[in-house]
Length: 328
Image 1 (cartoon, rainbow, N blue to C red):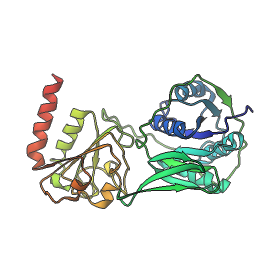
Image 2 (image 1 turned 180 degrees about the vertical axis):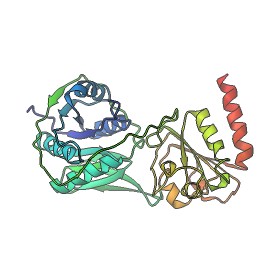
Image 3 (image 1 turned 60 degrees about the vertical axis):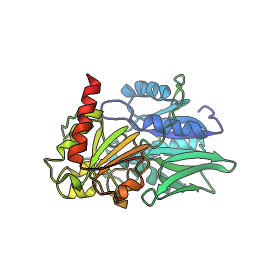
Image 4 (image 1 turned 90 degrees about the vertical axis):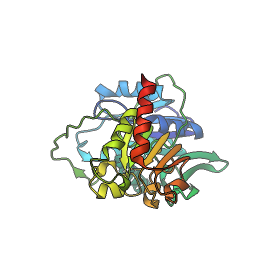
């Protein structure tokens, strides 16, 4: 095993079913580069590992550790935790960064429990001071920004997708094979599964750079089509408040907020959303927030960078028309 830099930051990168690294990759490696030397870990079979390693290097990984899952890879998510534990033992990193995805949170929690490591979850940024790595959080619906640090390490950090704008420079590909001993820890096992075919020209909500969300102010599922039209005009993902989901306007997979998806896009447009604290908790770290609501006292205007007091059914069609004109 080769020596690794003293300031190594171990980054677990996840792959998609299509054989590409997840969209969270660039942000994770960008965050790692701000506090040390990014060392990526990829758990994939040999047929995919080289291509994934090249993608990781292009996104800024100084070195790429590749672990091949064993025959127990149907267990969730023990093989990935085993690989992360082996990588941490080999690299001795100052911190371990993982995406704050469903699988990422599962892996990070298990890894922290297994290794007695401190953990900081749903982090929106990282930095380093004279004592070590510091994690930055947006809490209480974005009302406060707080920092956390550990007195022992390495600190395990789950990073909110889209929250980190920094990007690392591309590096030459340096791949190292990691030997992993199976722990045989208890885990759920996949007996069988049936893929759900779902096709959409819109980006995935989690990690999208633009999001258009609608609330109860749209009035009905038919009127919610206005949100989708604006999203298509902007090439954005479609989101919704909990009130809109509970009213049956859209499926729960579109819900943004404390009990839904947390997003940090470059642009977030809220249509007919009052801005309850539960919703703001999932979108307040967006870089630019635009709100349209007929109630001038709606809480959403407290966090909006640009606010329009008016009827969404008058304003949004004009906006869509203007966007269409610009594309001609």
